[in-house]
Length: 236
Image 1 (cartoon, helix red, strand yellow):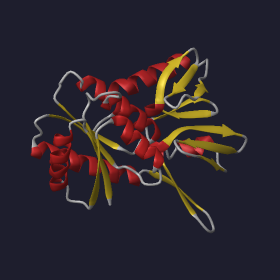
Image 2 (cartoon, rainbow, N blue to C red):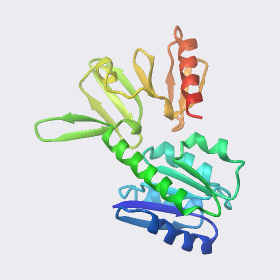
Image 3 (tube, rainbow, N blue to C red):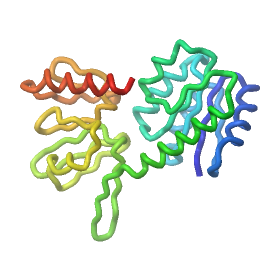
Image 4 (cartoon, helix red, strand yellow):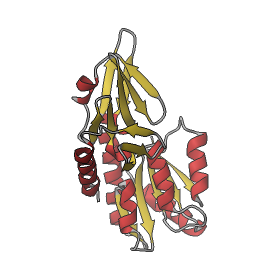
């Protein structure tokens, strides 16, 4: 069951658009409607065990705008797929910070909406496949790569710092890195970071969107900074 959140401050548009979304998606789904970004954020935090899969949002709304909301959600819930629906074209460059699956202008073209929803569902399916699986005698543990902020190594163990928890594994960072997607970068002998989680790099350290700060190898700082800038540029 897909959970789709729609956020728009125009109640009349919101009610009609929800019907359009429902008619465009093939999968079983549940639609939640919000007239402001704060209510949507609070809903996700209050029911964190009931995930939102797709967020379709306007950009210009009273209070928090759609881009700011999406940035906050992306930091805590990287799996969420975003579709922006707006009257304005000037925000196109700004939205790419959260890597949306689509940017649709109002009035909404139903074919474009269907295409956007299909793409979002495909991205969710692909995301769910990208996991590191740990098997033990009585359990199987799955770690989603896109929910990893960074990996820290100490002694013969690593700590995988995820968006909502930390997982300790008995293995070397070098071995774990062999399983990681290319958006991870080794920045220190004891740290590898998810470059999608980086807010800034400065003075031999990296700050994540979560506020955490990670040291960068002084000797390799220029090369690491260059690699991060190249990755971020490729996302535009």
